[in-house]
Image (cartoon, rainbow, N blue to C red):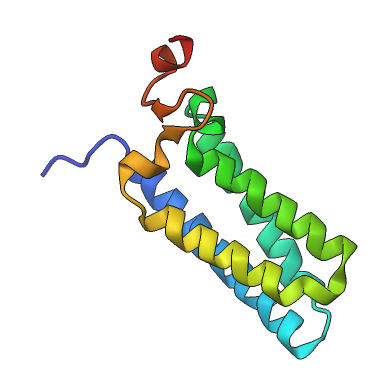
Length: 128
């Protein structure tokens, strides 16, 4: 049986995503309980950075597609949460909803570029 070329990369991404979910669950749990557990925030931030680096390594196209734009929105919500701690729970819920939606949205949504007004699938599409 031939193992597809991207199997290890995909497996690594699944593992990092799972670690990220554990970190985010801990951050959300701490917010609900009004406690502070820096380990979960560290896990969420570190794994989030790894995920972004993995996505960005595939090319600049990711940054203009809705799947990349959703990251900007989530970062904005996290900034708002930091500036206004009283809206932490709604911001975290919004981050989770955006993440869940974008993870399971059809490709015509994930790969849509607001900048181009259409689906962009390759770096060549960025030029047009």
